[in-house]
Image 1 (cartoon, rainbow, N blue to C red):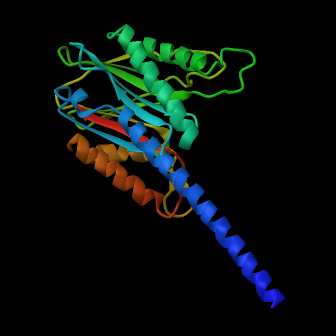
Image 2 (image 1 turned 90 degrees about the horizontal axis):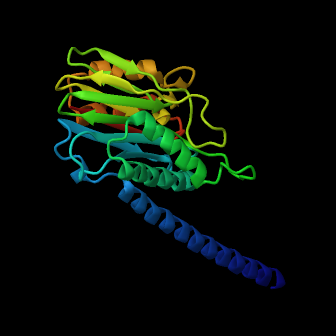
Image 3 (image 1 turned 180 degrees about the horizontal axis):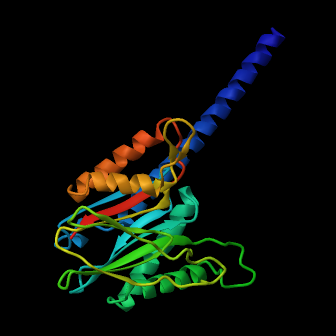
Length: 280
């Protein structure tokens, strides 16, 4: 009887602990789901896309419920050229998401002050705002975080696109079907150490119907394939884009997601994955 009483008491204790853990889990899950809706709310709304592209599609897939990737577009209140950006912040999950909000708000601030900002200057400003926003310009800073980013400035009237990148490339699908890759500066933004080199503006004269893709390294670094696991890589992405060079932005994005999923197979997702795909 004593043993039965002890077992019963222990069972009740375990049940209570289980209920407490379940309640705590539900609180965390609820908070993450709410945070996810807030983070999605920071992404550009449909009205910022209208009239600016022949076709447009974005991929935004956090590894966890929330993440450190984002894409951003300048307001439609200003006439003329507009800016489109993509960024990959340090980490993923909650830390990455917090940093992504700082980056998004910094981009809004940069282009509110100067709607015609060129991509190079905007990235330099973003580097400064992230560093100072995290107090990483202080010798006693406890953090050392930042982001990779790329910005394009699109002038539809003159069919000119300016690009500058910090570790994020730009792919150009020409109407001939050829794929050209524009490479970024090999620097990240916002970290304690100031930039050793600044990104450069690269000017691209495009034709109507040309396509462009910017993608974070969560895509190209994803491990998978048959045989010995290896990264997806830029060569495979180049070949994929060539095979869908005549497709719309949404079809290209869908092909990218499908190919990445097939490549990943049974491997775990390593990082957040984001891309912007558009035709002009």
